[in-house]
Length: 495
Ligand code: CA
Image (cartoon, rainbow, N blue to C red):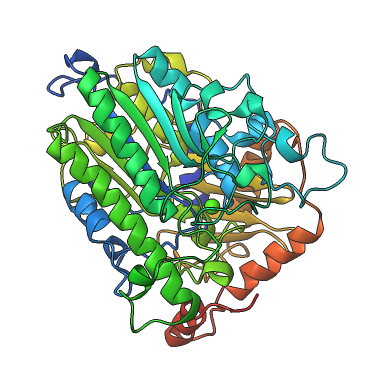
């Protein structure tokens, strides 16, 4: 087995230096740039949702009719990855189109949890102001942009969305908050709802619904102005705290505990997404709007009772359940409805994809790590968008090369999985493929050597927590299929 595998890897390695697709369109495919009217872009983003927890992902417990319809009308990606299994770094990579470790955003930015040796802490942890965001790029293309909901890319004023290319903001700067208005008892300013800059104003009603209302108002105003718009609708649902309305809880009489609550929170998320999508239809701009839905990291099953089946792992580890996410893209007339795209893609690709759809020349993106997905999804380019994908947090890291994935741990030798045959990461093939292991290890190190050191570091004890959590949600090969599902479906409670 070793010979062919090594040959396959060498073939992959030989491709590293080949030019990646520049996004230029071949004959017969209409280019966005040639259109008289630039498409609007609506990006629906959830927080800590389980990989399995949507109807379009196969869930029979959750009720997500609106996102299911989006899947039917667009493209579902079966191997979409975030750049990190935690909120802040995942969002930093997505928003810049660059591996966040390039600018030191390697670890999650959670004030109160950081090592005292961090060079930055508190509100100073954010995406460096030199980095360009999606909104910066789209502003150059004449777009009006708004961000709603969770930011988590820096609490200081210099990191504020209005300083990062967005024209409007209604949200909170931190990583989590209540779904109901604070009554003079918010834990910190990072959790207060802020309208544009410094105008604090708590929501009326349930936050998920309020965020949709804000996005709808923006869409209606920009449409009236005839200006192309970009909406970043960054729901904090279904991140903790576990809070839902009595009406939404009543939708799930057969569920109990946190599982019932996460179902209700996801139901509200779906309703909110549906209201935004209905608005596009009512305004007659559905055809000219690119819509993406995805989620920022794997579900933390021990915290919000999310389920990542059929994958092992959770939020904060590099198993598939930590980094592979539900991902939908719809653009009528450009992307074929009801299809599935199966090559691995990354949220790094959103910036180049949005920029290209907006008419930008992808040559302007030379320092980004993503690719414009449109020619791939349209079937014009049948090769895989990425020869390699990488993840890294402290000692831990992973590399995806074709169907192979090497995972490096702090407490055991590296392991090798064939994701194509074994997406649950049950059969470690490292011992059978020592040459491939060494080659991927080298390749991973070569990538790491291009990165900056972290600007801040979590306290070391959280590495133990993450490893224990990973092992808990990683069935053993000797377990039966039933045991796997029992384990993954019944999260630890009271953790
Ligand atoms: Ca998250």
